[in-house]
Length: 120
Image 1 (cartoon, helix red, strand yellow):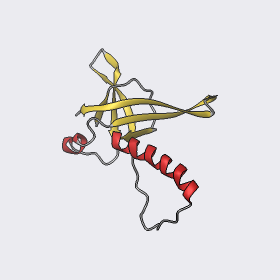
Image 2 (cartoon, one colour; image 1 turned 45 degrees about the vertical axis):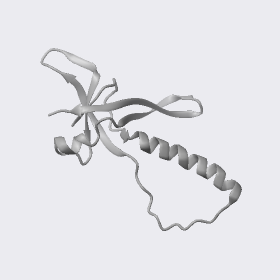
Image 3 (cartoon, one colour; image 1 turned 90 degrees about the vertical axis):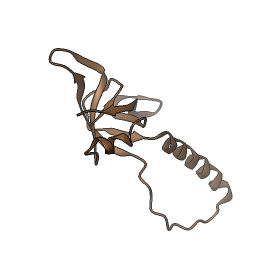
Image 4 (cartoon, helix red, strand yellow; image 1 turned 30 degrees about the horizontal axis):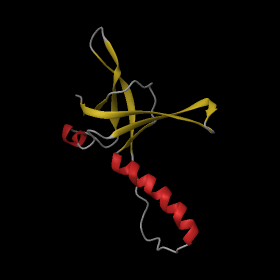
């Protein structure tokens, strides 16, 4: 389990993204744009690399009577120990959900957070 400092709703749509991965995704967009002009043929021997890990929101950090809505508890797939969770500290969390109304030509919305520490 990891603790995320951001207020989000209960949903299974969680993605963990590191800053390096965000830069890689931005770089790929630039390469695609420049590659279209050059039309250079590359070998397709590499397998696609998944740059995220899925997770589930469990609820908020709480005590018996108090609830802390700015600190969310989440379970990341494949993380079983505190040592496993340590790798995710500082990584970005994207809560992706779908709304009815389109904003900027997209019905998908994102709330960002950060994995701060292990819990439990």
